[in-house]
Length: 351
Length: 197
Image 1 (tube, rainbow over the protein chains, first blue to last red):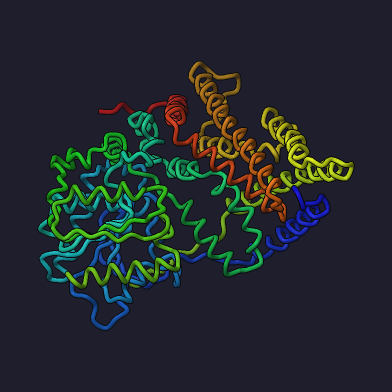
Image 2: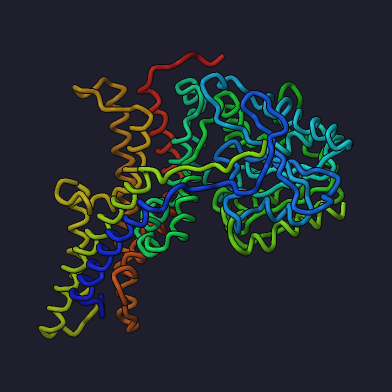
């Protein structure tokens, strides 16, 4: 209102419709959407898991390899989504020898996989593979989000195999007051959910994420898209992110059951009550150097949920890296590329 | 041996979302055109209290949007703006294979419908709160002589207000309890695969 005349609105709507129509031509011409840009080689496989080694970008990479454990939700190419937005490329440029676990897409045959399978078998076997391949007693481990929680469990259970632990946007205390995902799942009957579906459908997780901010994520974002519909490059970037957002693997039923109940609903990780494959996870066993990276505006894993690690872990060499941004921005924003990989690489190089 | 980059074509979902939201935005624009016409008319006919005129015209917008919510057939595009979250939920439920039974369904289906209606009521409360907040902010801007320069700015204000009131609702115990029940009653509509050990 006030200064906004009917004629002006009408003109704006005409322009919007015209741009939308023209933009659809660009959308049709935009071609294939690539994601995961850095060359990599599969070096180890187990069931649906593939362990990749990214081709080094320096002549002599750091002798201790870094294993990245991504979350089970969404796909790990977020770490390497395009050439100018790649956390992995930043680490490679800084001389780190980078490996990454791709969990694949669980299907009906995977519904009985437990967290024990993920931690004691999959992660453990990758760690042992790297120890042998690089002739190292210990290797570096970087866990992302839920993958960070799994890495905390692994490093607590096998501290003698982890040289340095980096956690990124990793929940530790699941019951901080601002934890919206816990708030959403608190009253859900997880047993009924897993018994009903077997594996948890990825579309349900998508709903949970979108429902945290539906007017922006399912509405405004698409209205604003008209502004870049005539720019093929910007449009490709947008579509790449869209592809990632909706590329949600189903979750292996039994692993999801335990993660949802023990971590989200009962907050057992910080209480030292998580049992994985008959072994108790005690964060005080984290005696290796720990770097905890969190995002100040993270709406999925609030900073307090990550920072709780400071008081729980047993390391005498505990550091935090605070990034001013959100849960996704920490991987893909321009500032993240400049700040985060170099800081992680420098921290690792010093240890 | 080197792994190939993952590629895909732009999917149908993107195009559908773009068009759905574009239609909603155009419907929003039509409502604002009407409101702006009335506002300009009132001012030209001598009204001097901009705040009162704005409130009066905004009430008509509120009525239009709440009517479309009560009966989406009145203005389906406007209703989509209001029912964003419920649409997301229903699309999700549909993708999971939940479809309404042919003749009203049994008790379990009825129970799910009942909870879904309660969920919708909660969403509507938040959306009404957003309209009140938007009105308040427009009046404050008017009294401060601040101009809304374009329709997109007005739409963005509408989004901001909805995110604010929705976010407050989301953080409340009532939402957690109700969304949990919504999931649980939906799950009850499925045949169980097997019993938990």
